[in-house]
Amino acid sequence: MYLAYARFDLQGDYSQELNALFVGCSKLKECLGKGHRIQAEDIMNGPEWTCSGLDKLDMKVGGVPRLSIEQMCVLDKMAERPAETDLEREVVALHKETRRIQDIIRKRFGKLTNHTRICSSISL
Image (cartoon, rainbow, N blue to C red):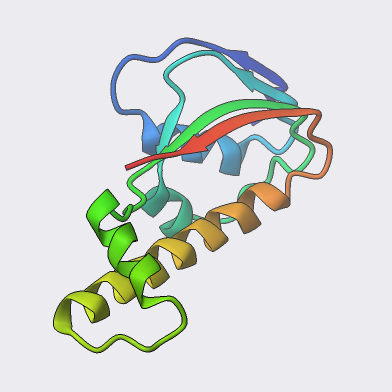
């Protein structure tokens, strides 16, 4: 499909449709507006995006697990030592999973070679 400029405000869950837009519209240059939220799972399990020439993008990525403040304190207290308790092992595992998902998402966004403006955030 040939679509170069998309600007819309979304209300609701259109994660799969947005992902399909990035996969199917290789000529897409801009995707701007509000409510553009895509789930990390859809990015990770979906096909590669073909819109590598995307210049401008407004996007929020949801569904990325985050450490709670208490879990971050546990991780900080561990410093460089290995996990010793079940809680510490759980926190370390969650931290690794969060980093793994974020790395996959960054790689996908990193393939957008012409970007002049990417407003994105990663959230739960």
